[in-house]
Amino acid sequence: MSDPVHRNQPAQHPGSVGLVEPRTARIDTPLLLDCGRRIDGYELVFETYGELNERADNAVLICHALSGDHHAAGRHRPEDRKPGWWDTAIGPGKPIDTERFFVVCVNNLGGCKGSTGPLSDNPETGRPYGPDFPILTVRDWVNSQHALMRTLGISRWAAVAGGSLGGMQVMQWAISYPEAIAHAVVIAAAPKLSAQNIAFNEVARQAIITDPDFHDGRYAEHGVIPRRGLMLARMLGHITYLSDDAMRAKFGRELRSGRVQYGFDVEFQVESYLRYQGTSFVDRFDANTYLLMTKALDYFDPAAEADDDLATALAPATARFLVVSFTSDWRFSPARSKEIVRALLASGKSVSYAEVEAHQGHDAFLMPIPYYHEILRGYFENIARSLDGETSVMECES
Amino acid sequence: MNRPDWEIVTGWIRAKARVLDLGCGDGALLGHLIARRGVQGVGMEVDDERVARGVAANLNIVQADLDDGISEWFGRQSFDYVVVSQTIQAIRHPERLISEMLDIASEGIVTFPNMGYWRNRWQLGVQGMMPTTKALPNPWYNTPNIHLCTLRDFESLCEGLGIEILDRAVVDQNRQSSPLLRAMPNWFGEHAIYRIRKRVV
Image (spheres, one colour):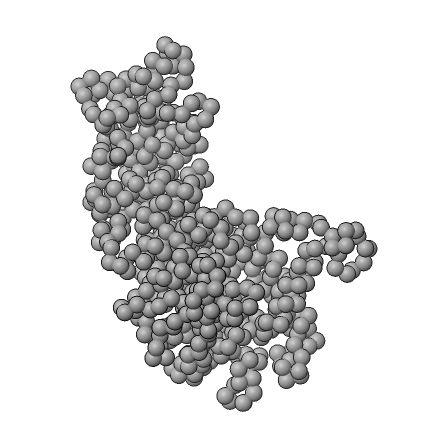
């Protein structure tokens, strides 16, 4: 990992970072996990966009959500139908401008896209970990990302940004490594899951675990995958990512064949959509990883170690914060973001908060909604200016 | 071009104070207070475009509707000053907002256009029409200003709420004061600027 600068191919699409290649970092510092177990060494797959400057102070870490990965922007091959998951926001001239920032996105530990996880071989047995992979927390992820940061020659992120579960990692970064993060961008997140959030996760897990092909997580050894369970989990997830309005606008009660069939086959377009989302997910995601990710979500609760006072939990943070929520998001509603903002205000932190009018539900954080992107752009432009050494209004005070 | 009340507001605020600006717009006054007084400032604003401008100006802006109340956002006495500049007349429950702001800060600074200004009285009393002036430019059917008041109205509300008036400044549109204005502020003041706090019982 001696050369942190990654030169991307010329852009194929306007505003795109172009063709990108994932890289792998081998980390040999043992990682002590919250669950008490230890991982002696591990690999993290990541992508970078833009170039690290000489002072190594223009790096931005992007944290991914439940089913995301390291491929946040650009394409792996020219013929790829879709770019990375946050291509709308990352690229030359985009809100997170790769002409000014060196953007890093990591597939989290326990993932299934190349980082060490349930699909990797367990050095103790020589067989894939499967269900034996340790349960991870958001803090474990942040600790592993911190180890990666150092191998890249970066001592402080100009910003750490993420939506949903990614936003939780951003909060944890600000708490765990205050000296290593200048700006925290927390989007469509929550300070902890509600009972309803955990309930949805539990139904998803039960769908996977009770699939006859699950085999206590050792499905790979049986040459099968718990297809049905993982599909149901994803279908359920998708319902919570969209709003009632978005579903109505997208599908209404539209019928595929134009009339009701009085049967249990796919009739309504929304059924067809959910089944498609479910089945296509099965081919690209590992069931054990899905279980791990939902557990990390459930356990996240930084206030729990501070007498349930979020302001106290956030007290160590020195970063400036931008918090963004979306009006139709009912998974992590604006009320949840307000809890974060209130706690930040109460502990005297520097914070801006935008509540974006959007009908797309939780998924809105991935969409190029003009007001949302205007806020991101303005915020990141200020960060870029502060790197250029221009004194800003806020910096006059100190 | 600064608004007529800014210089007086700035003069009343201690250096390095913690300031909350309610209805901060694009944060221009907040930026002015940070530059001139080195305050730690937070602004609250509901309008998307203004919030975006404030964030782009590197200010701390919280997007929220003042009509929903502010007490859920801030702890008691978390600021030295709460400023409500040219905003109180557009609030659904001004009396609630004034009470709430003095819960979260030791002092409040309120500025508003004086409905008792002679041009307003002339247009309403003699011409028989709702006033439109530089300070109140909107026609009656299309105005954000739903709770207009005079100096005496405001002072009587403060009396009723147990609020002490620490300072009062009255200016015309050109930020000028004059003997006439000082003698009959409710007639000749176009803008009122008050510094208030809860009466100590």
